Amino acid sequence: MKNIDGYYDQDTHDYMRCSDGVFADFIFASMAQVMGDDYKKCRNAIELGAGMGRFSFTLVNRFSGVWLIEPARAFAQTLRELFPQEHVRVVDTTAEAFFASTPVPPDSIFFCFHLLHHLLRQQRKELFSFIHSTGAPAVFVEPNPWNPLLLLQIFFNKDMSVKEEIEYLRLTRRGLSRELAACGMQVMAHAPLCMLPPFAAMKALRISGGAEKLIRLERLRRLLPFMGSYHFFYCSRALNT
Ligand SMILES: C[S@@+](CC[C@H](N)C(=O)[O-])C[C@H]1O[C@@H](n2cnc3c(N)ncnc32)[C@H](O)[C@@H]1O
Image (cartoon, rainbow, N blue to C red; front, side, top):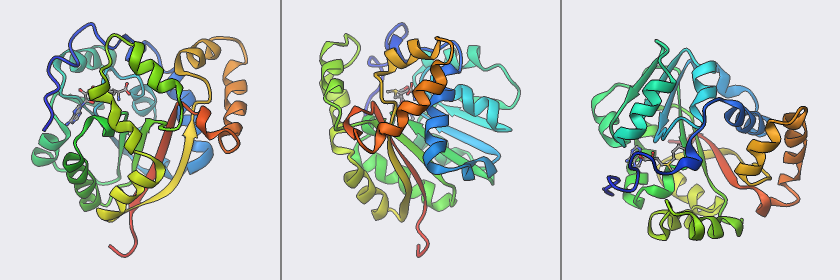
């Protein structure tokens, strides 16, 4: 198990801080273009490694029960302040400890945004096996390993260390699909996401008509996949498992 203390201290990783759901809604709209609306049938969302809630806004607005699992105490406190709603539970623990102690409610779906590359391979295996055992679908969003700008970001960002981040290069479509398949999960949809760097997308979303233009830009995902800042996997338990 990796030690996260120190890496995710208070007042670090400001690029993960958001005060509203404009960016999260855009990312969800982009994913929905590819995965359809099937996930909306789920009533409960469990987000693992929720950070400071950058992507949690849409979950809180769309699902009737929301669990935000976040082991870094400073981040969990930010989540509590951002989401005081009754249907939201913030749990400051790891995904592993949460699974060991809490039964997963029916009609759940898991979300992990930028979590997998911070886990050891064995931790990912346990995570996928657990999700498989629940029968719930899952969405994984990771940095796009084919986008060269991300290496620059890691190099220049004072809060990022190559050691903590570099595993994302292994989580290609093929690499992660194999890890999932070994745990009985299949990938139902996959695509690059967010054709602009996130800071530029956030600015564009504030301009009138910006959201519609950005969503149109997402059509380039198949032509210019290396431009995506992220890529996402929509997964479910494989039929024969
Ligand atoms: C790169 S941050 C992503 C945060 C947020 N999802 C986002 O994209 O803005 C990774 C997060 O995973 C959390 N984390 C690390 N190990 C974890 C584990 N074993 N279980 C659950 N969360 C974990 C960290 O505390 C951190 O907040």
